[in-house]
Length: 292
Image (cartoon, rainbow, N blue to C red):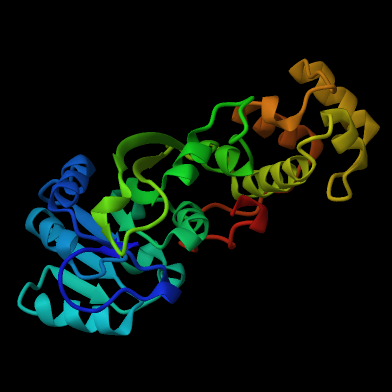
């Protein structure tokens, strides 16, 4: 999704639906809580309706737009505002340290194409993380991220995000707020990375392997998955250790385990050597297809 205003027509190939409701535009900026002194990264500024509102509040605004015509229009529009920079780039190629030396001080606001929500989210969470991330997403995706254990929506995406960040629903947005009108409801969420970072990169890799494997076989009992899945070590000794330490019931199914249990289980089953810290500034590998 991209922002409202006049100008270029939406391009279906880029997942563009322009946010045209001025009340929603203002609400998004208000709930983002941008303050004087903030550096803001805006993803998918589109026609720039929210870009202008963010520019009024932020000390520095960097807006990343992939569309050729939209990027050119934004560059012309904001050419006389030196604190606003338009990057004609794919956000998945932009490292946060290209924008600011310390990403933990960066605020991110994005009204993004729904077909690449998960890759963008994990790109932002894959390296040195920003202060917070305000995203307009498909409501179904927001519900999956926030789904509690034991529910149908709970899965690898829920565990992957909430193991490293706190997530809250801020605003629901009806299809009528966009042009063209999408077939789904939307939602604005705030993703706030947990600090200090609770997992090392190696532990995140192990957790990703475990969640991908278990939720691929989500209808099977945990014991069957741990003993039989080809991506897991299938060590009887480690499984027994996990049962003892975590009081696991191997008859459970994956969706019954909270994120903290997945973390503890991955540390027992898939111990990995340290792979360094996040000082490299790289925003990590692309997310697993199972999370999309």
